[in-house]
Length: 230
Image (cartoon, rainbow, N blue to C red; front, side, top):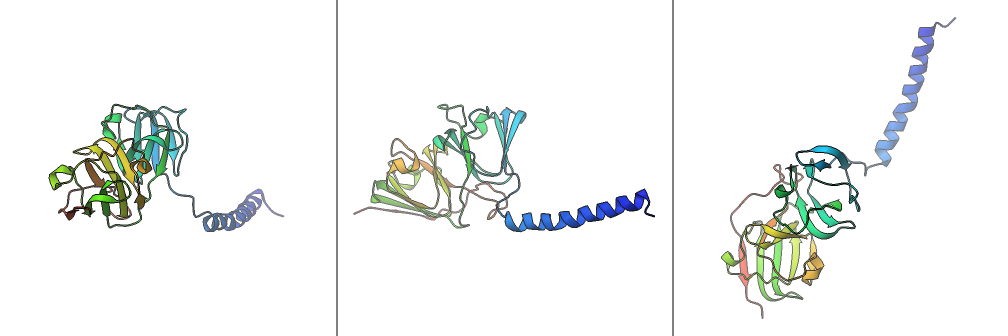
């Protein structure tokens, strides 16, 4: 006659037998499930209610965002829902208050987030003076440029081609002002990167832990080439 302990052990063995195939099935058929990547907090210094994201979020506007932790990135936050409005690049790290991810005073809200596409460890960017890839051209390879003027190129940038890697451009020198993301692709007009005017004065590479252990940008030797358009 079976005892209570022997029945319990038999039941646990059956449960384990059923659970293991289920776990293996989920692992095999749900490759999109990823680890936690970004946490948005209600108040500064990572206090208050929090929202945990592992993929794009089109509308987080019902939640106030006062601080952010990026565990795996990079990401871009937007001023309004639907990935619209001012852009804020968020690489791996901690952002305890607004001033740590932007110095722009135009907006104090975050309405949506999405992970940035980083396709390569290499970086190459072409900037053009006029729309349609015409006028003077500046070629930037594996470098961050705090001032386009310092390299003999004006601030009038009306089109661009991101040949490799992901970049962020800024309205002012020293990586200040509004931010504009350049993922791999072509941008025939400044409206294509969300700008209202063709003004960029500094650019840098967006780094990712997949390619760069630190997950942030550092200064390297310049490889710049400025050409005069025909």
